[in-house]
Image (cartoon, rainbow, N blue to C red; front, side, top):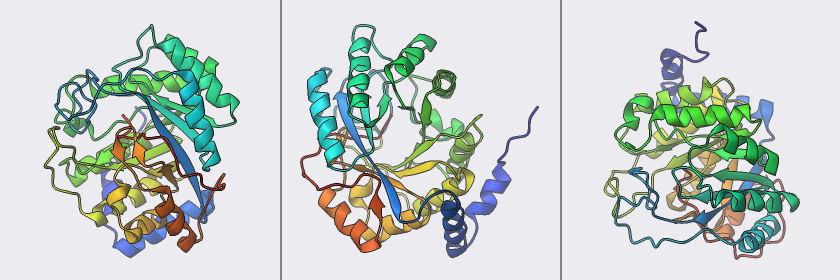
Length: 329
């Protein structure tokens, strides 16, 4: 049996480094693979909102909870194209489309394939998050031109059962394997601050780093407690613990893009800056992430200008980005 690249003891040693030393090591390894003054911009659009049959405890789109979110049907491909053009004009490199499904319905799936082709034709990288996939669906997504598939592990295998009961951890790993086998890049991360322990956070990062190939894209979300969900009153995670986790993720996955994802709206400029110093090098643009708030683009522009950080495709802002992002599922 092949010994895992990362063990719990090795990851624990990183977590327990003095804060300044941890950030120094993370920034040092970051500079070996990425430019320190560049960041990747992405946009996330909810193409089908609400009434998801899964019971993810953090998610306002779950049909199991009363969150006041109204169900919306799958968007028309022309609306998706309009939003994708706007995202590109605002500087996004990748356009992500999320649907609140357990798995793609047979009737709707061809429409999603058409969206992928249309967005790809605009010169944007494409990403979707549609739930679990079978082999045929993964192959069809690849044929349509999909670049990335998002399917988060969310947390550690041990804590997972406290967050989701309608699909197993192995279900998620199986979908990731199908995505890889189809030749599609993997976007996979987790959510911090759901009541998990530090060991759970360590084991989540171990799971990601010890995959046959680490995800090319790793979104790290900070829980946004949503009224009506089981985690509505969850106490916030300590900011330094969140930053430590970003830094350890960078050290475990040096070549992955680490995306500072949900929760940025409530982060100070100083906290976001420390996350960038720790190795985060991608953010979502737009004032919503599926259904939860995100930073205003004007605020992002002000902060990044202060820091001397530029985006891959930064252009003149038009300030009307798609109204979408929840925790990418």
